[in-house]
Length: 387
Image (cartoon, rainbow, N blue to C red):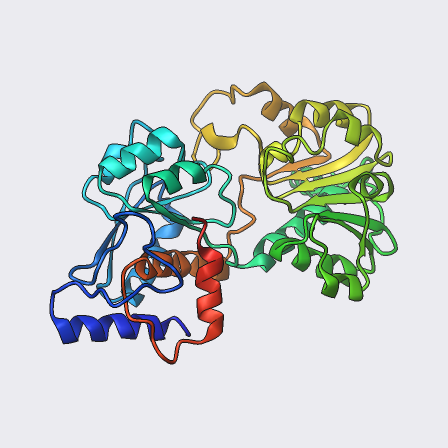
């Protein structure tokens, strides 16, 4: 692994200078924030917020890989203004998609001594970048954990929703082998619209083309290689009009909130399939429900939900009911599949997420740049840095 060069350099520096701080320079611009530099006199102390059981073995393996250079403490609680105090005495805080990293939380983290916010995901719409910058905190992310994990899951949702796999399985378990209401359509020859062609979107395009689909893409930054491979970049409104299925792979920004809304849904083909494995607020849930009820939307596969923060990644099975009316309505449709934000959940992705997150935290320190460090490693670290 290329990052071994970085780890070996840090270990060599510690062995050479003992427990004194090593301040020969920073790697890929790390530690440039005011008061943010941390030498090699001790391990980086990392607080992992919203740590879940499925992450435990991967965090343990990653910590072992860093061999005492990073010390990890897990907190099951989510990060918010009330829990930020748990980070007292830590150098860095790792957060997940539903943690709050607003200005108040950033101020609380800084007061605790935290100088680095390490996001365990590609998206960082929940991070107040301006507040981090103003407070001298470095923020990093994991943009390339495994695009195939999410892209494959998106296709899984598309296939399962279109062919009514979930209600079909439920029927068979009850002894009902009737086929009424389970009719879908062939994907081959159909038009699939891909909104956002970053790492995940590009992977999904390849999968859709493998099914023999015509692929339309919408992205402010077209990918020349995808276009050369047969994907067609078009305006978003045309994509919505022509696609038999639409899969969302774009980030959540102020401009993309409710990208799929009553107007855009009305412009789509009757019976369109909607898939969202990106961010819940890309879809206006109320508008989606109305479109399903009037059969404008023929099926939907939803792995993210705009109000998921109070529900997802938690076991609520002991509750008498789910209080969110719109979420309950989505669950009531036989042509809708809802999963709990698990698109990333593969061994490969979790390994990459935890290893890269710890690498980001470690590279935050002042360390010597290994002379043999390859350009790919330096480019990866530069891409991982948010601010």
